[in-house]
Amino acid sequence: MEPPLIVNFDSNASVRFMQITMQVASHDPAVIEKVKEHTPAIRNGLLMLYSSQDPTVLSTRQGKEALLKQSLEEVNRVLTEQSGEGGVENVYFTGFVMQ
Image 1: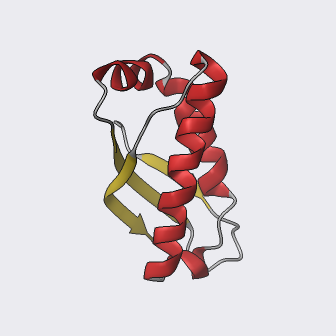
Image 2: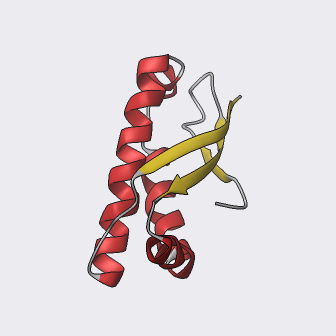
Image 3: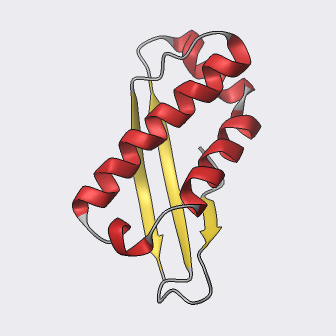
């Protein structure tokens, strides 16, 4: 999913922003086409999800794994809302930067 997703955190936090590059996976090519078709809505949902995160939690492996799970759920939620069915099987972070 390009370009990377970038969110700002509360100005009082020691971490000010996060940039995530990610990919989605499905064995069904039709699902990938639906992801491409609904990318703006998916990106919006993910940005809302990411901007509400606690940077302290995300600095741990468990926090990142929980965010991966939430990301998968959000992508499938948006796809279901937009097209009637989900189908994304995995979400992978291919880049993860917090500063």
